Length: 298
Image (tube, rainbow, N blue to C red):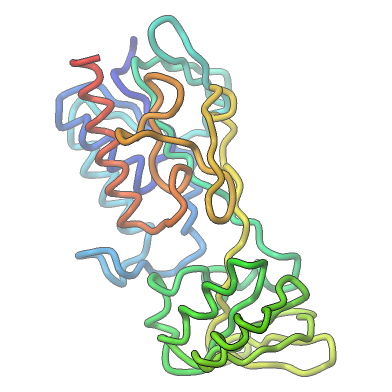
């Protein structure tokens, strides 16, 4: 085997895992396509010691620190295929180049699939957001919106009033029942049943939510919970089992972050329902330690 561990995905979970293995003086390869999930966000918040920095700067430091270990290598490329090979695994790049490793760790992340509303994608990570713990403080103290995508939006609508005055845009995706309406009213949430026609920057660091009846509702930020899908086909190629997360499928892992395929580990957003940078770093570190220990203890 060329490597003791191959990590696919060089964002927060992947680099965290690789660092543990490099510090054990094992040969580790990170294959990274350069498409972290939070690339749309200008700043990262709530991550201990790194609050307010850009995600790119944090990852840049992490890459440099990893490469200071002589047994660590990073290849900037897209991993197109993975399969069992002898007693380990082979990962092929788009150009056909193949690497082999005794263990494989998937930190491949997920893709956010936003509702089909004009302007929503353009504002994603700016004034259209998914996590109040990551971005709520900066948008707090004024009007906020929640764009419903289904029943899970009830949770967001009840949570986000701690950061501002909330309007729930049901957008024909969710209709609260009488009990839910009482809960929303108790939290001061206003209901807007008219469908959204488009979203656009309001010229003052906020968002104009334009409704089909011609009105525009101005908010500092619009929170939503888009469905997610795997950003990489590797877990499916390898035959890993999946579980249903809150917003989409996730790779099923055990208490050691190992998938249903022995020798294949997973960490980060692809393998958990509740996601942020701190969770990804923690899961990655534990997955890296688990993968290393398996090389010794089986």
